[in-house]
Image 1: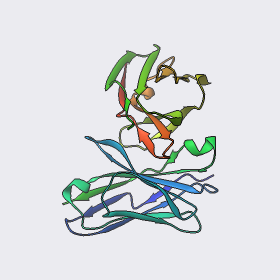
Image 2: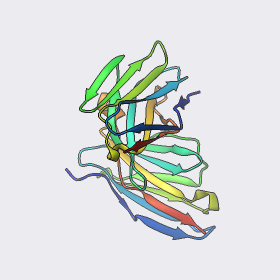
Image 3: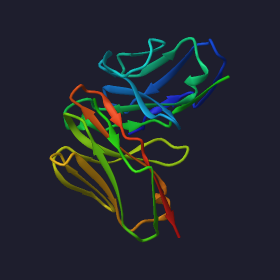
Image 4: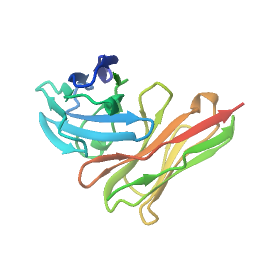
Amino acid sequence: KAGVTQTPRYLIKTRGQQVTLSCSPISGHRSVSWYQQTPGQGLQFLFEYFSETQRNKGNFPGRFSGRQFSNSRSEMNVSTLELGDSALYLCASSSGLAKEGNIQYFGAGTRLSVL
Amino acid sequence: GQSLEQPSEVTAVEGAIVQINCTYQTSGFYGLSWYQQHDGGAPTFLSYNALDGLEETGRFSSFLSRSDSYGYLLLQELQMKDSASYFCAERNYGQNFVFGPGTRLSVLP
């Protein structure tokens, strides 16, 4: 089985711009979660999508949004970028069900730099 | 609220055994997971405890005690390639995933 694929791997943007990141989960997985990782804050949960619906949401401003398509692929959007949004954005997939839903498989991440 | 605590750094020598602890204050969660992340890489799943007790996966074992609000990851026969950051994580009853701050393990020759 192919793993979790995130594109692009690297991105440079300027303040005020918006960005869209993409994630393709493991085949058969219906849950996709997004995380922001920074040296100071560690791994912070953004949101989780399951069967095209946002199931859970972390404590991030409304500038961070996402969606999931019928094939389980997910996109994350950040609008009006700020310098503090510079981070590694990780996507993780899981079956989303029962015990196995508590185990996540991560993509390589998108490193976003905001200048 | 929920939070997980881990030591920030641990150092050990090749061939040794090391234990990385994780304590939590969560009121309820489905289980405790452990992930490994090498510098520049993505976290990879190592082990999961849904119930109290020990789970063994090769050189890695994980333990959970809900009554003590405590878990640990045990790494045996340490190798240089085990130098990485290790995170404990939980999925709480609110369905959010929460990660600990991570423990950086340095394995010395």
